Length: 105
Ligand code: SF4
Image (cartoon, rainbow, N blue to C red):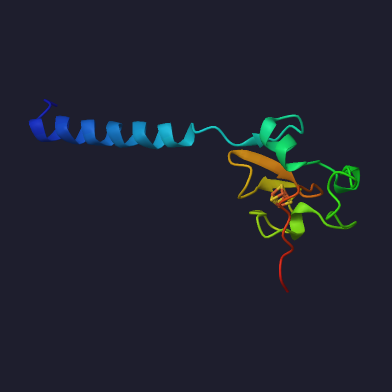
């Protein structure tokens, strides 16, 4: 079957659309934040809220953790999720940083 200009055009559109979709799916998923990353250090972030230096961060209250923070973007049951403050990183649900703001309600 000979290729008509319309057929060639449609093949280009379909393959171009597939390439765009593939490129979108190649975006890297956020990785877990490291406690020694500059942003984490500046916020006093710890994966385990119980490990926070309470002398350095006296506003820390036992029991506070990322899943109870306004900036948490995951579900309450997620172990790790994105956070409004740690761009392109996942924070631990049991974590804490000095920007903690308790979810109301
Ligand atoms: S802003 Fe909230 S969710 Fe983000 S790291 Fe700090 S305590 Fe956790």
